[in-house]
Amino acid sequence: MKRLLSALTITASLATGLPVIAQSLPGFTIFGGPQQINQLNFRLDSGKSGSWDRYNLRIPAKKLNLAVAQISIAYPEYYRGRLNADKVAVKVDNKKVALEDVIWDKENHFLEINFIEPVPAGSKVEIILDGVRNPNNGGMYYFNANIRTPGDIPLLRYIGTWVLTIN
Image 1: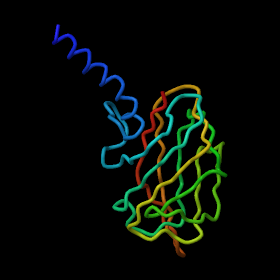
Image 2: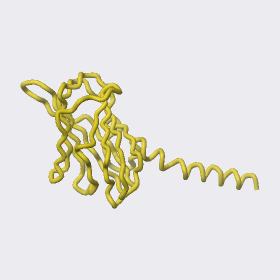
Image 3: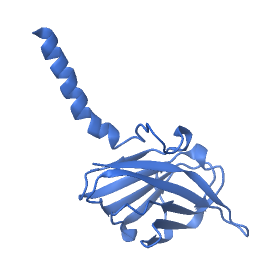
Image 4: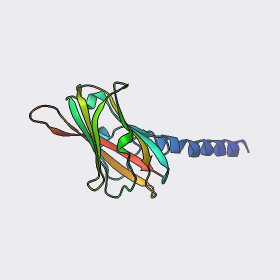
């Protein structure tokens, strides 16, 4: 009887703990997807399909070895959520920074964030997308991060991918 109760307790704790893990880490990719080195950390407040949410998308300092004038986030065509360009905020090394503008291009499936002052190389960045309406259909969505450097010859560079799971 003790073994049965122990097994049930372990199973229940694992079952209740998994949704929290799946919404705050890159997760496990069994088939396909970006290499582990290219997966970026994130946190979703809800992660539930059809609900309002806040996405905290993080880029570690080691990924930004160049100054950043713009961050572009491309997402898949099958992502049917709604982003809110008016509620985008960015923290650089845990301090909120002023943005020049944020452009949400629904037809081409990307969000573009332009900075007034370039983000210094080696900075930790957190992008906060608030007022997001998650898609009605759950699934796995790859949000790809690209940066554009400041200067006369701006370079577009892939930084990594957030593998978001909406359930």
